Length: 417
Image (tube, rainbow, N blue to C red):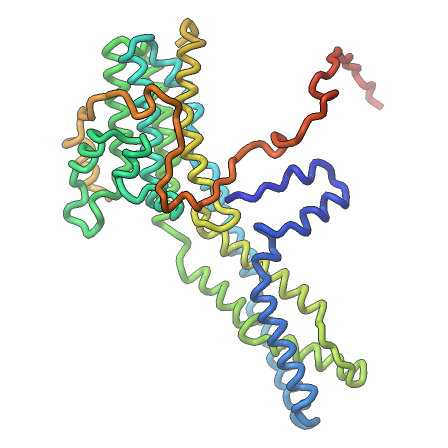
């Protein structure tokens, strides 16, 4: 559920900065609040024990012990480890965001390259885009918990209109993983793409695609979408080695959670020496340091799986709904632009042999005669979707600005000094 905040920073004024600073959902405050409270409680307990329950000799012994431990804490550079870890995680997160799979380009190419006003031509166009959406659903339901709850079975995909009953039977008929311990209903992302290639070649033979160049371009667009989905699968299958985040997390937890007394005793020791037994019950600087490091660590931990259900994870269900709505793009273009310039070896063997030149008979989809609707399972209706719209799209326009007076503007070349 991606948190939108750019609409609050249209200018770099201090007031806008404060508006972001005090946001709660998706903020660093929400990420660190409970651990920070626990740490402060530990600090207060240790401070109470130090000031009121220990005699002078015991306090002196604890100060020596804590100072010795503090000197050895710098042997492993925390900033370097956290920076390297967060950089690796952010790189994967950024690449995943670039490969989410937006079907607008593919839909436009399909609408323009597959010509014809007949029912058969329209079925082919809609079926190609629907198979692209089906591929995305099959991929997302295996890597995203929210989509898996929405589409727990193939039957739920059929009910949502992404797949027809005949196509479900065809999909279940291939046994490309029968010798493995995996569920045979998983990992068949390639099959709808194979159907698309067969449809494109048949459309070329039937004269729906005028030029070979258009056919090649359509295939390239499908391959580009397939590459996007494959990269998401690769990131889900080949994750950052577990030892790497473990090292960063363990190092952090030992320093800031399991041993809060180190920082506590160090500060108490300095206070005792400089301020003659002054009692510091709220260590502001230490709390700030703890918040910065904890927030830094939380950033890396939250971005490890961008397909989860945290505040700033990807809006996968909304993207699926948006892509399914591109069928409306095809409908619009075919109405308004009619005359425009138009795991593995066993799996691979199944692709090139059993599935060669075979696909279910293209038929009218579920939403042929009615508007496309986003259908969810009853268990997933509690999931709140946050539409991905422009940050300025929700800004209200006053009556005067709605009907502006338009005029030309002269462009004057500035003389170079």
